[in-house]
Amino acid sequence: MDKIQTEMLKEHLPYRLTHLDGLCWACEVLLSSERPSDVSITFDGFTKLKQTSVSFLTNSLAETGLLYCRVIFSFLGICLDKKTQQLAQIKKPGSDDNFSIVKLELPILTLDDLRLAPTGSPGEVEESCRLTLLATNKGVAHFTDSKNERAQIEDALRCAKTIIWLTEEYVYKRIGLAVPPYKFWTQA
Image (cartoon, rainbow, N blue to C red):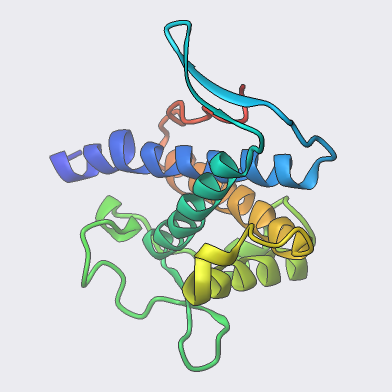
């Protein structure tokens, strides 16, 4: 394995997967009935930030996670077609960017691979991923502003879980490597 491949597998993908894990945690908090009235961040026993809502944390995790959904989908070879607004395979993967599954000498994913994800029915998985990429492209900043937009949150949660599963199955398991630790938020 060359230096670029090693960096992708040991640094870049785990870093991005941690952000997807953060998106999952944020979505689960937003979908739960928990509404903490006292949220604080503490360093070495000293409170550095105190808020009355968890949204300062969930919003940033969701927005970053949504952007990494698009980045990892692109890495895997899937994009949102600009004309049809449907999921499609990237025509020349790796031609514009070194961060691509083909740089690991693996094939890009197909939409059939995507539909195999155990995160919902094939139609639910594909539509959640399509809607999440569409929302990411059209306006990430408004993702968690409204308390009534639960469908977007459910779609984003399913999409993030799908991408995590695809990365574990079609990258790490295919190469025969253990999945590196990346679960920071959902383990808390």
